Amino acid sequence: MKKLFSLLILLLIFSCNKEAQQVDTIITNAKIYTVNSNFETAEAFAIKDGKFIEVGNAKAIQNKFVADTIIDAKGQTIVPGLIDAHCHFYGLGLYEQRVNLVGTTSFVDVVKRVTDFQEKRKRSFIIGRGWDQNDWEEKEYPNKALLDRLFPDTPVALSRIDGHAMLCNQAALDLAKITKNTKVSGGEILLEKGKLTGVLIDNPMALVEAIFPKPTKQEQISALLEAQTICTSLGLTTVSDAGLNKDIIELIDSLQQAEKLNMRVYAMISNTEENLDYYLPKGKIKTEKLNVQSVKVYADGALGSRGATLKEEYTDKHDHFGAMVIGSDDYKNLATRIEKADYQMNTHAIGDSAVRFVLNTYKKTLEGKIDRRWRVEHAQVITDNDFELFKNENIIPSIQPTHATSDMYWAEERLGKERIKGAYAYKTLLEKSGRVALGTDFPVEQVSPFLTFYAAVARQDVKGYPENGFNKENALTREETLKGMTIWAAHANFEEQEKGSIEAGKFADFIILDQDIMQVPEREIPNIKVQQTFIDGVAQ
Image 1 (cartoon, rainbow, N blue to C red):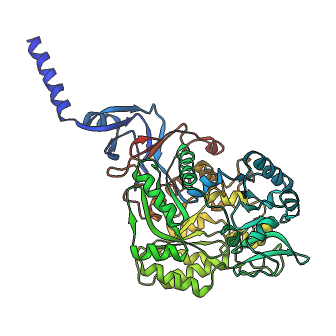
Image 2: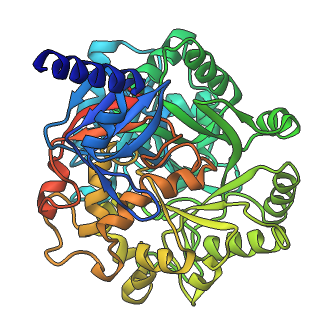
Image 3: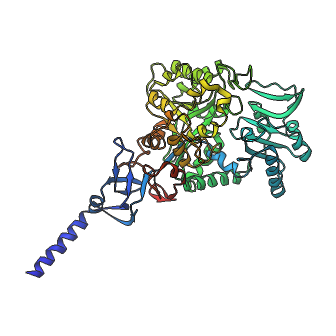
């Protein structure tokens, strides 16, 4: 009788195992924030062919599925792979090959980094980025005189941290054929006592950028792969690159097809005739890793360089309003062309005047259309009840929380006490639009999405300043922030059906964290570490 009972048990076990579904990987014993429509948590999920097959409790998953790879998460937190809704992925890689001027405390500090770099690299053209005169004791724009003395024959071009101002020495200006009489609309060539200072703001920078030595193919590949290493180590599985040319987009595609670049890329094409003539007639391009269906356009400059276009003069510069970098008729015609091609228009608009102009153009161009998801990138300064213009299902604010905590030291000087109330107003934007897409704008800001998360919920920098948060009424909740970095960012990319949450049928992109981002004390959020990043269910 005992033998018969044992045989029945064995047959039952065999029958159960035979019915279990074979999958590639099972993750169990985790605290999973699925970011599904109900923001539910789960304990386990099964992965097959790079996608989530089922999500639920650990016992049910293990009873239903068998896998060669079973990962016990030991109670750690898992969230969907993070999406940076506005960054410069390729630019980050190039940035690593140039003079890093981030965090410089004076112009003397800038020059020292340049000389140290040149002693090691011996470049024929020195390119750098990252200085911010607002961080210096002397908050005025620098002058090229010292660079002229140190590098009389070697061109030097050093971009401000936001990429909207550039300091060049005379050698670079000569090479670009820039004189004190050069005129370029949509920006400024700064003079002092009738002489060139070397500072260019917005559009004139293109004259110098046109003479930059072109990176070799191998340098381009290295830049993309280095950027990928940095991003995946910090939990990013998709990046929305805000402005790429055809050659780099095609290189990204070839590297993805060769399985050398696993990062998913939402590529906004840069607004050039060559790019527009190629992509708009061609239509949308979509693979599992690459998505090309949007155009990045600049309306104005940046607040830090006083290039953002304001309705009223800058508080700290009399009779200065900033400048649009594109003509109003040109912009409207471009919007019509993009709409007819069924592409998405993503416009950089920072000043309140630029934001209103962009929103009004969007509204008129998209009248009668549905679900177009045109984006206002940055949307930093909004006044005169213009928030109401975001009550439009065709428009999405694409914002970067760390800009608020970086700019708060000087933004009120630019805007005054009244306008600052409508600046970096992320909660208000969310309330009006229903969703916000969150990014960093790296390498303008640091890559870490945990700094983005912290800035959104705490409205403080990592030093804990200001004590009560910068305009704290515009902080986002943790749930809203995680959505903005996952499912809402995916929606802004027309990709919410395939990513942005941990649900059956979606790509198995997820990260394991060393702390619970939804529960840890606010001050600990910037210190959260990524234990592992998975794309298509494979550890990176």
